[in-house]
Length: 178
Image 1 (cartoon, helix red, strand yellow):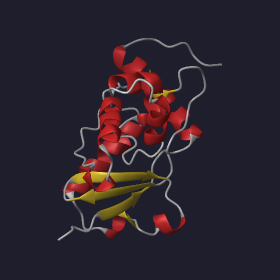
Image 2 (image 1 turned 90 degrees about the horizontal axis):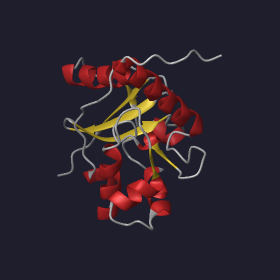
Image 3 (image 1 turned 180 degrees about the vertical axis):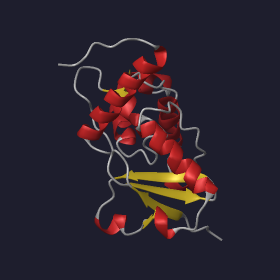
Image 4 (image 1 turned 90 degrees about the vertical axis):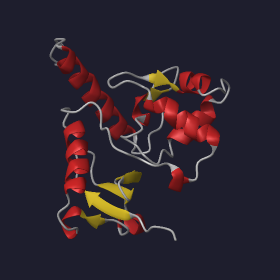
């Protein structure tokens, strides 16, 4: 019998996040769910108090506040039905260090299909686990941001957050913006 996922809606710096769980594994994150999709998720306050949910949302909150670099959350791509290449792309994307970026081409190369950078881009734009699998760190080879499952403004915000807090964590001094 298929287990019905638990779907929780929480506010965040990126807007509302819809987080789906099966047992203790996160199976999907939707940034800014709307309409019919938003109605699938229920506010955290609707759930009984849970150390597990507190821990998950505490970590997400710390990450989005720049106080945590690694979410260290259990996830499961099984329910997403992704093929082998898509899974390799996501696994390779998850190896991109905090505060750093790589290109779609680099991900295609390290996933074993150097000519598939457009396919990499399409896979990442449908990433079922943004934030956990940090597709916002992957950029086009030339310029610009590329696509993002949460939109360009959120991608820019996440990259700035990581750049600023990576400098803070390493003790580097960054010049003031002005």
